[in-house]
Length: 336
Ligand SMILES: Cc1cc2nc3c(=O)[nH]c(=O)nc-3n(C[C@H](O)[C@H](O)[C@H](O)COP(=O)(O)OP(=O)(O)OC[C@H]3O[C@@H](n4cnc5c(N)ncnc54)[C@H](O)[C@@H]3O)c2cc1C
Picture 1 (cartoon, rainbow, N blue to C red):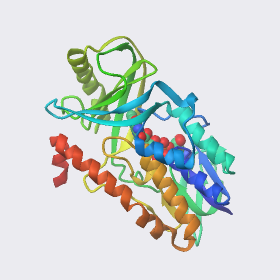
Picture 2: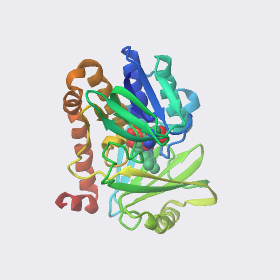
Picture 3: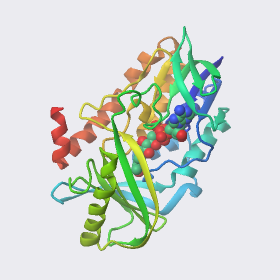
Picture 4: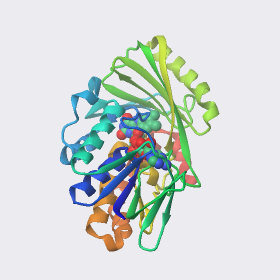
């Protein structure tokens, strides 16, 4: 019997493992892929994320930084194309070395890793929780923290209902007149069913769209590409690669699923994501809060954890308010 099993070695899982191992708990992280693994992402670390990292992990290593490494904020274009610039100092990183660095910090503190193994189920037992693998093997711990992300589909919010948004982004060789130090997001319904975005990584422009129906992704992406070309002089010599992924669909109530019994859910598995798609800060914070609840109040960890995430939900709600100001689609979701 372990103290804690963490499923998933993304930011939520590594943050949880880092706190648990640092507090002397026997913790094993189970990751279905081999590390380092890539996570489709824009890789923008906002100020809030950097604060958490400095406090718990240290400075982001150079090996994880993209060019330009400095992110100066976000530029939003509302449904009518009106521009709003939110200046904030952040970083531009590649997720593969960034997440691997997070894992290394947790490992240095004593967290164990089982990689290349897919957890197929997490179940509650009598005073313990259990994970199962496809070959029938089981591992038991006092607590399991499900950090399997939006695509994980274990005990978290992604199980069953799977209320998801589908993302499609393409990396190019090319250029535009947009300042590469900013991340651009557009809510115009001609370009996406959620939002569309543009950013630059190691000199490669990236254009992405989020849709409710994955079959619509390429059509919306084409319209967005044309818009970037006409309005911002976007021209490309070739497409380098495509990435498709999912995110939780965040609704106005910003509800999350913290878990049940001895199973706690953190990060996107619980439904934490700031409505415009920034999720690393809430993944780190919720992973740490889940771990702290296990360390400090093991008798009723779930209640302690649920109470401690209220601030994160309030932050999501504030972001939602901003989006509903920018976009009719988001305003429209209020009535759902
Ligand atoms: C296109 C896109 C752009 C984004 N841009 C940004 C951005 O610029 N900034 C930002 O802050 N956020 C961004 N996000 C959101 C951010 O990527 C996520 O919120 C964040 O990665 C969530 O972290 P997590 O630890 O909860 O999950 P993940 O990072 O998804 O990690 C989950 C881990 O669990 C593993 N796993 C899943 N299922 C199992 C299983 N059954 N058994 C074992 N292991 C399993 C996975 O392999 C994975 O390693 C973006 C998301 C997308 C899709």
